[in-house]
Image (tube, rainbow, N blue to C red; front, side, top):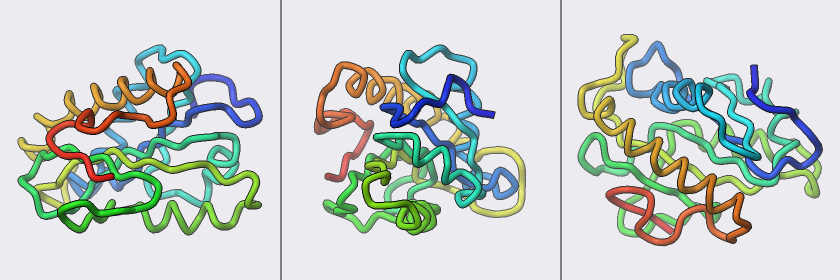
Length: 174
């Protein structure tokens, strides 16, 4: 259940993506669960998991979706990334494990109701059956949460970009 009231075109929706049954694939859901315990003004936090189509009504209500997910970019496990809406890759190819499903789902919305999507993610170490995050991803979780808080504060302040260059963590790809 989303935390906060859903009103038309709420400024920021934080969406935890992933499959918690596949270890690091669920890092976005773990992050969203941690954020549900916090009061972040002007923000709705939801645990979407893999049910992206079921969340279309939530995506439609947001101006910006900050998607939290596993991101495979070939860096060391636990690296924190920001992927901006144009999907540009910077130095390494970036694949948010669920970004394609999210972007495809958003295309089902009327053009004027499509939110801007920014992905904050962590390089996974293990995408295999299991409920626990790998040690590298578990240790990256506080850095991911700090990046989410900074992004939420920047958006609440009306700044154009969720995070200035270099603010995502170890790497930012713009």
